[in-house]
Image 1 (tube, rainbow, N blue to C red):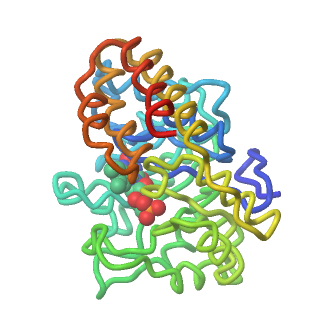
Image 2 (cartoon, rainbow, N blue to C red):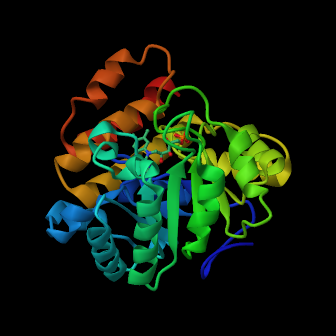
Length: 325
Ligand SMILES: Cc1cc2nc3c(=O)[nH]c(=O)nc-3n(C[C@H](O)[C@H](O)[C@H](O)COP(=O)(O)O)c2cc1C
């Protein structure tokens, strides 16, 4: 068992990475169906939260069926972050995660997200303030450092642990790498194997197969593995990994019929949570990715991304099985 504060996770826990515009309630619901152990909301801007922006509050809505679930916050102002941690606590997530990893210019250059890697004393103060502001476990997600000349994570992990956080997720890239190159798991492994570190270390970056997930656990010793981009069109990767970890062999691939059911379920949840037409529009790229690689799919693809009516889209998805099955 892996414990994050009072949250109990199974051995070898699998985490869905927080991703803006991706890990909304419908996607989290679907990943949960395929056995993900812990999910997070998309990141929530502390300043917007304090101003009570409706959309921001909506982003914090969590449901019982998805527990344990974390709300992720970002911002550059310590007081605003502490205040938003209090507001987020009222939304009753299981933990609060702080984003010190977002590399996007308009966020990082203002000192939020990965920008905090350029001011470690402030990062530590902010983390302390947030830990104080909530009774919930606080966790941090960050990168190795700002750039290749400032890989700070090994010492930083100890400093963050000392603030009272209950777990640390490390994306094995620097801010300047953005999403380029490959994640450096050697460094993640070094943090995990530092005898002073006793909080769970969750490794993140480039895990896109059951084999890579197993290697992360076996070779680098991490307590948990977090997966982001590989879940696009493949939320069942969590089931594939669990199967591989438990049985030592690959799960049979999903049949087209199963993919059709998955796409329909996801679509229905999206409409349920977001209504029409937003729930329909925002599903289009997911639908396309579920059926990627089917030969002669062009015409169907076009219909999937242009049909507006809920019932018609559901019929269309069913017809994929009839036409291509
Ligand atoms: C579209 C997109 C949105 C993201 N949004 C967030 C976010 O809101 N919060 C966060 O901590 N990381 C965010 N990330 C980073 C991911 O959580 C993850 O750290 C990164 O994609 C590396 O993992 P992967 O190689 O498994 O995708 C985002 C990544 C992508 C591709």
